[in-house]
Image (cartoon, rainbow, N blue to C red; front, side):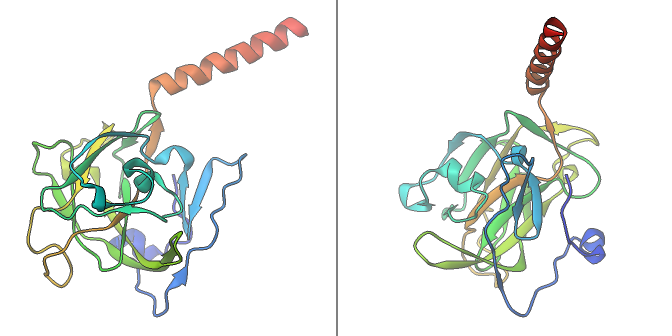
Length: 225
């Protein structure tokens, strides 16, 4: 998994330079024959997004989109959730892939408007960590014509106690539980528009199905030739 066109300064410091003028996110590159999805200058595997919503504590007005899951795996960043209580959260599962702890950051969380801290943990009974998004210099356009500045929070699974090479299948993401949640130390909440794995690997079941399909293909070729 690679991120395109990110400066060496970003890779060494984890910071994105704030651009003077916001650049709209253009149409995504979604070639059906490609395994990649582009979000602005960021490139993710198509399997990098969560595919199961395990549970959540959100109220109806905390969702700006068709569903909670769609708001968080919407690679166009046109919908979002707003966990406005201090202990609000969603628990997401990756079933066709897992997030692997490798060198550097392992997960990207897209957040909108004023950067506001996001709580990340492995379960609801774990305190977890707080991560602060950084403005990317990009804006996204919603279906109603409104726009939002796009921030991104980088997550290193090592900070959650995951060993090198360890896999994570579920994550809790939500509000921080603190009254000081944004860059202005104001009482606020994050508007989370997307979650994507940077280092993701296929699950064993997915690999088994792939192997079964490949074996069937080879067997068919042997039979017909």
